Image (tube, rainbow, N blue to C red; front, side, top):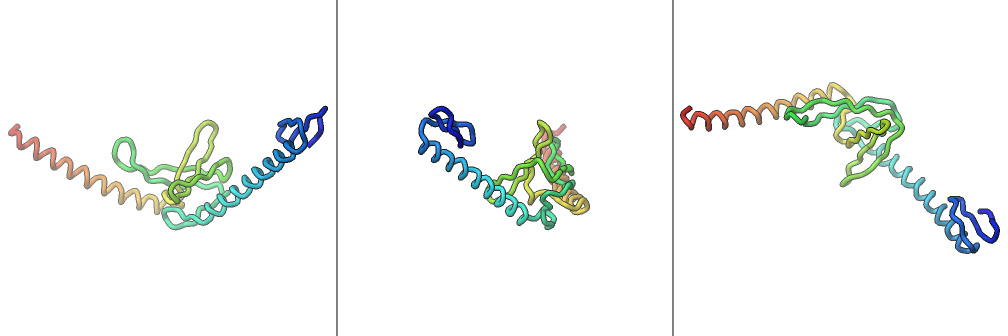
Length: 154
């Protein structure tokens, strides 16, 4: 903190006319920095405590491709690659789920650690199971449709 012609300037650039107010604000700045450091340490520990969908520990800070099985807009599940560069990301929690948000320029890719696969073969097994389930559902729906069409006598 430095004195500027009867004003006090704090480390964040804010100016005060009296020293006690400036000192209190400086304490607030320090508390926020301490909070941010503690939150970062907590998020690191949180991520390191989680496993991927195939039971492997999530590798924080390691450049790696993870795999994600998700429903496509066209119905059948697909396998997507999730690039994780080990830097330039945020961590957030949703209902006890840990989510990683990777920043790639203007683009953001987010995924739950518990839903990605570290091993491509395991991801493909999960994809196959999901595709079989989707196919079964489509076959049931087609059977119902065929019955309705036949019922009309055409």
